[in-house]
Amino acid sequence: MIMIVIKIGGSEGTDYQQICADIAAHIKAGQQIIVVHGASHETNQLSLALNHPPEFLTSVSGHESRRTDRKTLEIFIMAVAGKINTLIVETLQQQGINAFGLTGCDGRLLMGERKKAIQAMIDGKRRIIRDDYTGKVENVNTKLLQILCDAGYTPVIAPIALSNEYEAINVDGDRAAAKIAGALQAQELIIFTNVPGLLKDVSQPDSLIMHIPKTNIERYMDIARGRMKKKILGASEAILEGVACVRLTSGKVQTPLSNALAGNCTVIQ
Amino acid sequence: MIMIVIKIGGSEGTDYQQICADIAAHIKAGQQIIVVHGASHETNQLSLALNHPPEFLTSVSGHESRRTDRKTLEIFIMAVAGKINTLIVETLQQQGINAFGLTGCDGRLLMGERKKAIQAMIDGKRRIIRDDYTGKVENVNTKLLQILCDAGYTPVIAPIALSNEYEAINVDGDRAAAKIAGALQAQELIIFTNVPGLLKDVSQPDSLIMHIPKTNIERYMDIARGRMKKKILGASEAILEGVACVRLTSGKVQTPLSNALAGNCTVIQ
Image 1: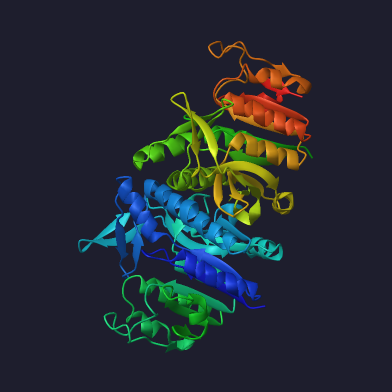
Image 2: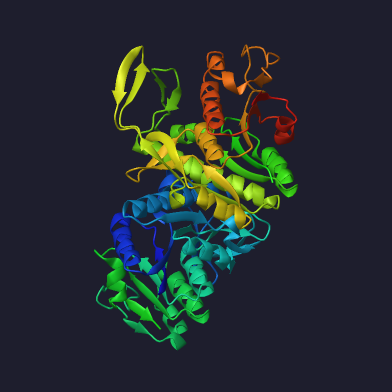
């Protein structure tokens, strides 16, 4: 049985119905799938509606992340663990898949260190932020995932982890999926995005890079722009931990999983 | 090992820190506890903030329930499965308990029938409502709860069920807790509220009814007012399914669980 970890993005226009239908078809064909998902658009919308507009920080190394004070953390939790997680579980259940939603806090599934201080560039100036609830997954409770899979459930994971002080923290979904794929020694990590993969030139959809040799990922980091940087970072972390193949692919085609497995995407192996 | 199902209310001023500390102490002392919780206050607040004010329906038999159109369902899911469930899990984890949050949709934990048509009294007139996402738990996946308990996790359950058509539905938390306690043949069902128990006269806190014989619960339904009606209904359903003892008790004292187990509440057995 092939183990596949899939990251469903949370950007505007994500068609959960279409993605879940394709995932369900593959599970019914005998593949073991674990789903990780985001909720960026939903979190932005909810933040605006609750008069706590989203803010983003750019780290000194150029990675962008959501500024997450405690109020933002609670908004993020409502969007990602409440609405999107339950929606994906409900949609998969309607497709005949016994989905099981959880966050990294449940049963200490994902543990990691909360960033005590974030150095961010704001208006060109270096600033230190100390009350942020973000961090990085360091440990995955694979035994728990194994129990759920053995019992016939399909795990659907929201990217919230528990810090070493047992606080809920916002972790990057792509990198959490990479960590989970690595811990499970999955054969495949498939990251859905709203572009066909890594593009040489973001303005040219036909400039897709179809193959990245796994010994040479870092070189491609400079080509990546915006959110794609973290996806390349996640891909390199997964490969480093032993995942055989990572695919960066469009979630917006009709059968996105089949499309990715057919190689119509950026394949890193 | 005694199995206790606890329902934590979701009304304004619920002190989750205090309740969780007492629950953690009892788990450490060897009791098996399953937590079910509400989020009524949080749902009201979020509904107001999102310009979709809460509405309540009174059934012909006098029970009150939240009017739950699809938008309200999503708000309820964000409040109960997102914010409150994660908050309780986080708080228990900080107390050293390996809590595990889930909704009734996860792994088909709670299944039931969605109400196709609700007869409600509105302004003294009978009205039929057909687009409500509410229902009643009919089946509990006890095998799933057993797997979690055997693995050392403390389940924390948000009262959302899957309908027979696999839609997420809002179910009453007290009655869901009763159904879970019955399915597990728990020794104790403890329902926390913001009053000391069933009062003969709601304006007199010292009019607490300390004992209700299990053969005679229905007679007390007429004494109950507002939300207490559903708690008495839940209690009678739990007793009918074989739960040895149900306690209706205050969640607002310092050690609410110890207080209830000491008998400072309404005991139905």
